[in-house]
Amino acid sequence: MRNCSISYSQEDEVMKKSVVSIHEYDNVGTIRGGDTLSRQSPLLLLQLILFLCLLDTVVSETCNAGFSAIETHPDLVHLIDASTTTSSSPTDLKGTDLIWIEKNTVNFVAASNNIGPYWDLSAGYFETSTSRVLGSSYTLFYYWNPGSGSDKDLHWGGTCNDYWTLASSNSLGFWASGSVRNSGDWGFKDTGYDITIDTWQTLIVTGVANDVANGIGTSTYYVNGVHVGTVERVASGDTTKYIGSYNPGYVAVAGVLNIALDVTEINALHNHMASTKTSTGCSACPSGKTSDAGLGEVCQCLAGYSRDDTNRVCNACVVGKYKAVTGNADCLVCDTNASDCGLRTDGTNTTPGICDPGYEGDASTQSCIACSIGNYKADSGNVDCTICDANATGCGTDGSGGGTNVSAGTCKPGYEGDASTQSCIACSIGTFKADSGNVDCTICDTHASSTCGLLGNGSNVAEGT
Image 1 (cartoon, one colour):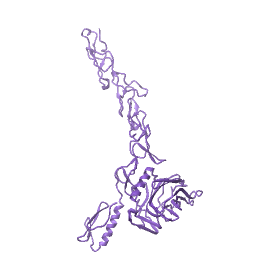
Image 2 (cartoon, helix red, strand yellow):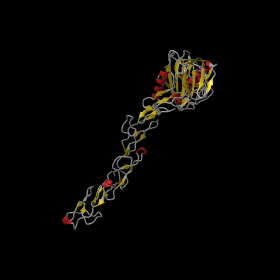
Image 3 (tube, one colour):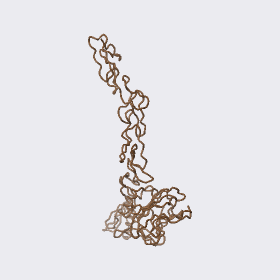
Image 4 (tube, helix red, strand yellow):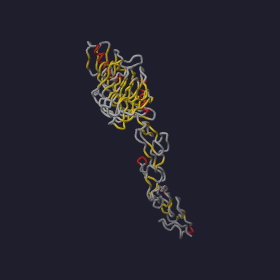
């Protein structure tokens, strides 16, 4: 967030394009581009700068690699954050189509003495006419200071009338209304945890539905990053409507994601809100995760790790599996005919390896297949098998698909050279070679010339007599 304290002879970037400056010598505000504002309106100028600075604070940040921002998360349903506004009817950070209207009396309290900013909801609440639906999995997150009232709610749905987060006599839980769905299972669902009042704290709740229509599933509650309890009801299928209808106290952040964060993400979000007193801005990805640089990039499992959706954690690929890229996809099974793949369990299984000797193809596409008859491959690699030298022996003889065609063989009797370079050539006249091997032909004995090395067609295999 940019510091928008006001001083004359000031220049402040706004939306990274327009710049407003006030010059003390003539009290004229100049908007870069040629227009000027009247010197008769210094108060208007100051108000304009405050307004423009405020706009600048809510411009989404482009985060570096390894960092992400909750306000640009692709699964954000809604978010209000007192650090981005001074309004008691705030526009949601998800978009201008969602505005929260003050009901009764909501007071915005500016930051002071390392506390705030926040909204005082002890005598009022927020309401919106924009309905956004909670998905089958979601995360609610708050930075708040519970008041002393007997009942304190944060979100109350507009379709199913459930209280997604409610502290009843300080007992934290979920209120299922039963008026719209699942009438046989209504009432307060208690986590067994009593909140501490008059203390700033984070509250994060994940919901994972088994039955959206009836609101059945598991809601898991974390206070200050610590798991404090679960209930077997969820808000999935309900819609945004109210925040703080039962006077929750002081609220600085209230938001919803349509994804259930995992434990490392919950800890990271808690740490960010607790240390900055806001949800906005770039925060470091938790251990085992990273992100690309850019706007709206989210933290995902590192290469070598896959996401466990049940326990919502990133687990290292097991032996026999690998994952080469960042993301929450599953680890892939190694090609059975590849080497250097899936050898460990420490998160270093990041490569598909290469096809074994005797196999050609590409291990990354699980296409390592045995060299056919007449072909061989001596080394590991994602390359094709090599055609055997026509004048070699002991090469490409296996047609079973067993992958044993790993040798180029040797040049036949009557041929010299090297089978591995396909250079087996017939012994010339006056030379011979009796055995297979990658060696030169031998010069015939001068006294055996009548029976040695008579031809140059590969038949010079005897030393003569």
